[in-house]
Image (cartoon, rainbow, N blue to C red):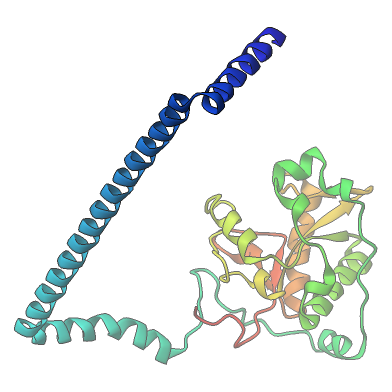
Length: 280
């Protein structure tokens, strides 16, 4: 490496001495640089000419297409007007109807709400239970039943107050009357996460972004707690009995229970507030 550096230095010193001491050396260098500059200039001019020709060709083609389109519209204006009207009718009808987006199997519940429960909701503010440690949501059973639940939001503050209080009341009734402790698996769900779950297939969810009440803070997925561990599996008889009771309790406080859907979601409850989920 040292030998190469010394040799390079020697060659450069000789070239510089040759240019400084001999006129022929200076003339050779100047001629070489001039030739290189001329070649670069010719190449640049050639590129500029090709670019100019390409732009002119594109402009000519664009003008030809515009002319053909103008001639077509002039000759077939009646067909074009009829086609535009037919294309505009479906979205216009959808906008004027103002109907809500609903998926099949998501009909509103017609069950009456318990009057005592409604009165309790109006007069008492229930507080969320103490949160479980994050490790409780990463056990083998939880990962098997809900693979992505560890990253879900369990912030009660993201839920709408009217739904939060009904859900907390359902939790209280399950504990006091049936002996089941419950925990929130997932409350608010952003549209990006909803779309991710929908892409996993209908066995996870049929609802795309903004088709789920989770996006509006009006839905929650819940499960049971036994001996400090979350129990989700429907194969557990104790949990299955709990889901049946939970469905009855949830409906008694005015919530819609996912256990009555074609694609059953036994731990899911939601509060359908009119005017919230409108057609997008």
